[in-house]
Length: 126
Image 1: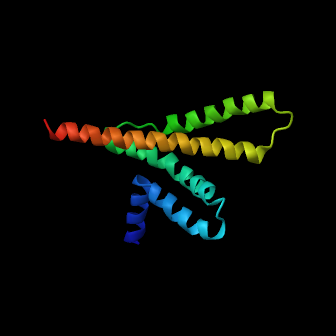
Image 2: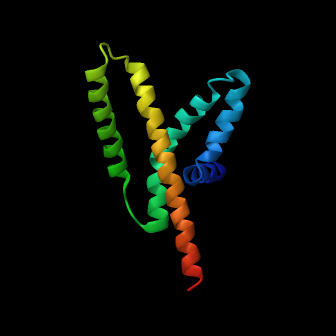
Image 3: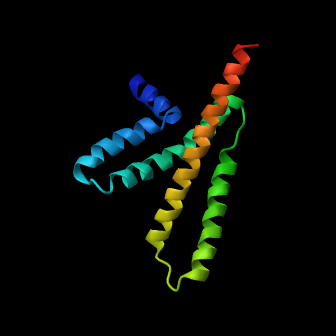
């Protein structure tokens, strides 16, 4: 049971391991959709990984703000889609929101760890 806890912690702080594993497994069966499947599964983990990383590196608790930001973004995008499209395709819309959240959370995750590395490098040279 301890190895499950260790694997969960590793995936929480390094979610792109999950991305690579899911991509490699799904590439064999669904070549064109493998990237989308891996992004969809990793996006769920990023909603927990980004706040955990920010808390670990900087002691900042932002999880409610990330969830509210994603919800607000989805509402704004829904209003825009509703005004421009005659008929809203729900599945297509949700997939678009989910993939944009993946891109945004991935960028925040990368920026967080880059800032953390710079912060630790500056701290070690003082």
